[in-house]
Length: 212
Length: 194
Image (tube, rainbow over all chains, first blue to last red; front, side):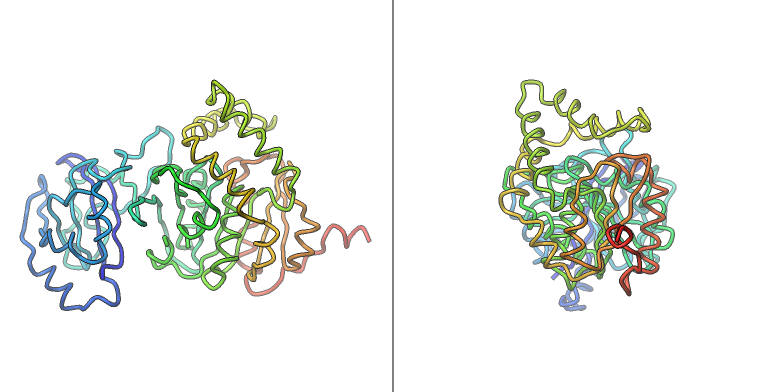
């Protein structure tokens, strides 16, 4: 099955788009994933030329079934491959909880790699068409989007968890400092920042499991 | 879920305030996935402090002008040294959080969770970074977890990661360098007094 389903919001010359990125899991047959990739066509996203993967296959993939099932996540309009990942472009704000850009002024922008920087492989190269990536990266757990930002590399990795009623931007100084030598993750706990805030019990165990 | 999805293996989890308790629960419940835990000014083993915090915050959330009441309440988390513009930003961000989220977390953190139990179940190196407003019974915490290392920032109240990042970062750096493999060889305050 697919290992990750990650949603972010990109601002390009062609306008803002929500982007979903998937990576194959270790248990996914290489051939199945290659098959998915091989059925790609080229498509222009504004001035950017991208590969369009077989959209229905992406949505129908086991790892994305929960996305398709919720009803809040309509099908990708089209998708593409870059490096080893399959990307899909969703109609803007089609995903519940996605906010355009980074929201409030002063909030630390998620520092997502620019289009084409994600993989150095055969994917589209970085294009001047990408004005800025203001994306908020999100993972989906049981239909709930959980936002995060990631920076740097190096072990041990550091994971920063904000306090009650705060968000990942409160760790901006630590993310900047430690990402020079460490892989750093700053999360928005469920109900906070750019993560979804469903009406439910927010137990300590649930919050911890979201981060685990 | 997030760490495993992103392939982040055995991270050092650093939590501020309630985030420190989430980090503690993470280490208690998924010890094999966590390298170490740092808590920054979390309410720990201080039931009186926690009860007052919950009571006052719930009252603010229930008041007619919750946004204003929350601002007033959280204003008490700042001191004379704090940068006014940063304080305004923090207050602006805090009042954005949906009330049902804050209420539920407050309720669950008291009713369905036990900090002493979580602390006892932790088997990873621990660091507590205190601020100038005592929120933890560190003597008792050290009894439950003798490997607990303790640091304290100066000139800052609760939001020390924002207010004095250079102090937080320096202590965290030292913890990463010498505290992950062995117990940090500091004396406790009690030992020094004896």
